[in-house]
Length: 238
Ligand code: FPP
Image (cartoon, rainbow, N blue to C red):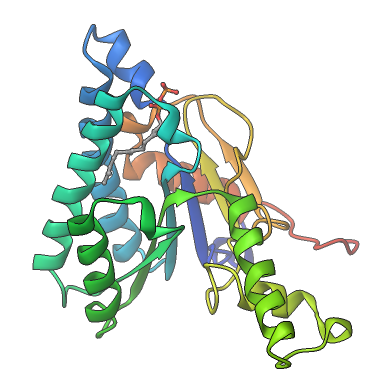
């Protein structure tokens, strides 16, 4: 690897954390055990991203479609979320800023409250912006942007003919955040599943058979090495 390639590091990594259920099933354990082990892997990966100075990380925690899962599984994920967010709140000041992507309105009031508080109060001295995609869908994100834009047009703040790609970007849940440039999906599935479909238009994709609870910093290093060898062309020629 050349020196030039070595320095090619993503600025924004998106993780599709898949395979918790299968990981647990293989061990004869309930799916929720897979999610709680997945939450441990998540913490380790976030700490590692901070250590290696990745400025933006998005985690696909819960999609707009995940509500269709059995009630007890949804409840188990909500309990993990509650625990994780409260723990994060007690660590404000440790260099992580939180941003939530998705409609917060569907969550229990205490979860919504901690999300708003985290977003507001974690904006201090941070090196990592952690975006949690929760009740998130890429199409819903676009709908959110289009509705914001339509509102601005109806208030006379914007003219339809002046809509640009950056105006669409600025009205998404990710407003102000650079586009994701590397998307990693675990568990052998090779699709985006409605994750950052606008923002990931030029992202490099990486798929691994490893189930999310086993995804370690070592695995991330392997993915980053792969990224450093990609030729990014953005539609041009190399
Ligand atoms: C996909 O695995 C994972 C999810 C839908 C949930 C992601 C949740 C976590 C990583 C842990 C929760 C952590 C917090 C902080 C709330 P799957 O269940 O679809 O796996 P499968 O495809 O093997 O069934």
